[in-house]
Amino acid sequence: MSEDVLFDLVNVSKKFVKGKEQISIFDGLNMQINKGDFVAIMGPSGSGKTTLLNMLGGVDQPSSGEVSFDNQRIDNLSEGKLAKWRANNIGFIFQFYNLMPMLNAFRNVELPLLLTNMSSKERAQRVQNALKLVGLDDRAKHMPSEMSGGQQQRVAIARAVVSDPKLLLCDEPTGDLDRKTADEILETLQLLNKEFGKTIVMVTHDPSAAKYAKHTLHLDKGEFVLEAK
Amino acid sequence: MKDLYLIYKNLTRKKLRLFLTCFAIFIAFLIFGAITALQGALNAGVEMSADNRLITANKINFTQPLPFAYVNKVKNIEGVKDVSYANWFGGFYQEPANQVVTMAVDPTTYFTVYDELVVPEAQLKQWQNNQRGVIVGERMAKTFNWKVGDTIPMSSNIFTNKDGTQTWQLQVDGIFTAKDEKTDTGYIVFHHKYFMETQTWGGDNVGWLMLTTTDSALNQQVSDAIDTNFANSAAETETSTEAAFNKAFIEQIGNIGLIIFGVVFMAFFTILVVVGNTMVLAIRERTNEIAVLKTLGFSSPRIFKMILIESCLLAFIGGLLGLGAAFVIVQGASEAMARFLPNLVLDQGIVLQALGYMLLLGLITGIVPAIRALRLNIVTGFQGA
Image 1: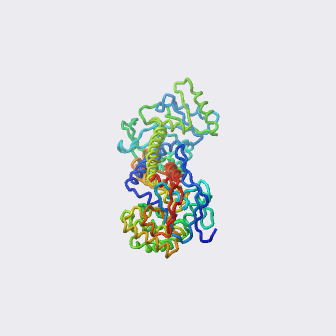
Image 2 (image 1 turned 60 degrees about the vertical axis):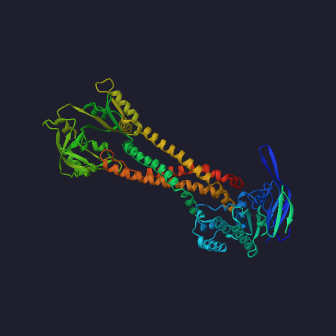
Image 3 (image 1 turned 90 degrees about the vertical axis):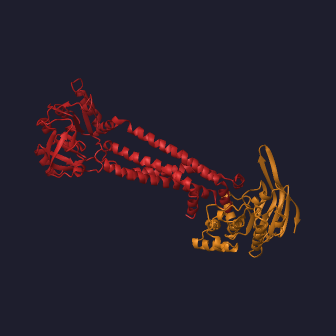
């Protein structure tokens, strides 16, 4: 496998059992994502976008096939090892931000760092830097309920990058935002990709959002149907 | 330790719910602390009873006298070490409200049979030689500020003095203390012979006998021998260990143990249901957040531990406050009821027991939601939200 490949999916299938029925999402899916890439995955509802993102993030496992990250198989890791792997390598950005409502912006961003051995001083420095990167260093003490959707998503981005992961997985990151705010968020993601070399995989319904990516993959019924650049 | 802030914020995120749950736990431990202290006070006499001490009383009931001749007859029964005797006096000092537990006893044998009580040698001798003398328990002396040499008028609400009054002038010859602080010193004893000679009812009798056996293994044998000896007489006896006698005395007002168990059980059962339900609801509301934490890399065992710590913290906050309130109440009651319940105290044993229950409450109420969180699949968690 090339050194440039960050993710390598080989012959991946994913099946669900719903009642007595077995539903196949993917069957023999192959895919590679290079380091430093910014990939948008588009497709209709039920096409398997989120399932794919979950498998890339190690929160769901394939029924068969291999998923490798940086030349390391992750599809056969135990739950505990996957949790550690996620903490070390992945930053997640969700559609509805998923901030802890009882924690202020600073504490929300600090969460991934609680999984490291950093001192509180070191953690505070990292959090401040991450908040500064998303332009919210003056909102550190604000609670999520005191911030707009765009601001909350910026806090979520700061949380995703604070531990300096190699990969950012974004599930409809602008799905709950107005156009202007969505563009600001996408510009921030683009900045993280271009300036900081973060590999980004973004699931979206929005063609305008996909334009910010370097590649767009179209998924339909568990297969990539067209690749746009 | 890094998770403590997160646990704290989770615990305090809904202030009203926290307050109500803590209040319920507070009430349960308040009841537990106060009632267990009361039980301890009532049982102190049973706990402090000597293993080899027996009480022989009239079989009809405790208030019926026994012939004085029984004293020597019991002395001669095999296995008996020392025998003493006493009569109830029913005393009060100056006015009926000042009740003083008073007994007329044999001065030569009383402190031999009750060897956990300590009287200075000189004071004991002085008392034995002074028919009008009285030996006062340390706590009773403190209550009325009595000192050696004082003359105290002790009245009875049962007996009448031959001088036509109901009062006996007694001279304080000594003050007795106890080897163990739990042993009651809230009473006084004076000469049985003097009492018999001066009270109007007359009679050559004693209220009950207190005796020790040479070996506690002989208790049953000695009890049977005594009761058999006086069977079919005008005054049949019933002999039991001091512990059983004291227990029976307390249980005249009901099965205290069962009542207390019932109250405490109901309080804790209610609390288990209330707190358990609250914890299950609280964690169910957080399904999405637990899924987020797992996604970020928090391991399932770590989340499991966080929830258990949270439920234990809840139990300890409410429990310690309740126990603190019980301590204040027991302290207040202890001072007010010192003469009736001398051992009313919320002691270290109760505190340790309560701490154990708090831990248990926390673990029991936290275990179900903690296991749910442990098993929560991230994808399902997000779908559930």
